[in-house]
Image: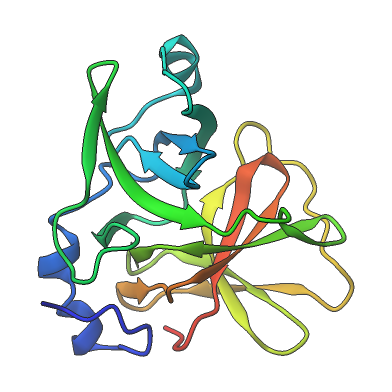
Length: 206
């Protein structure tokens, strides 16, 4: 099976495609919904697009709660395995409200997210691969120590003015070729207002 080593680059990263495409998120730039089990911290994603109105109408049984809806910044995305699994393969699935839901992530929620000014920082256990098309302009969040994080979700609704902690900055890059990004596990996720996030840290750049 393919490795989820974040240090992969070039043709090695491209070799992941055959594995992560078996668990794709359909049209990731469209809205997608997530459910959270607060007893296990398991996050269940609807792999097909699902908007806020449909999620609001969905009946879920305890202990599940509705985590919300977000839209991805990437052109393609998929998962190598569910959290806690030893090898890559099909994700754990369940059916709720006539919809497929896949176990994709398990955040470290004890004590809540760490805060840096307006940013919330959370470690998430997941095996996530992203892909950004050639010709696109992407945003990278750069921390004072030089660590870089790629924009993974975009703000929901009208974009508010993004406020950054002191010493943080955003770089914009135009991709010359398609860029495949295996995120590390655990992934550091950095959240701003409107469900916008940057994730990494990145071990290689495009």
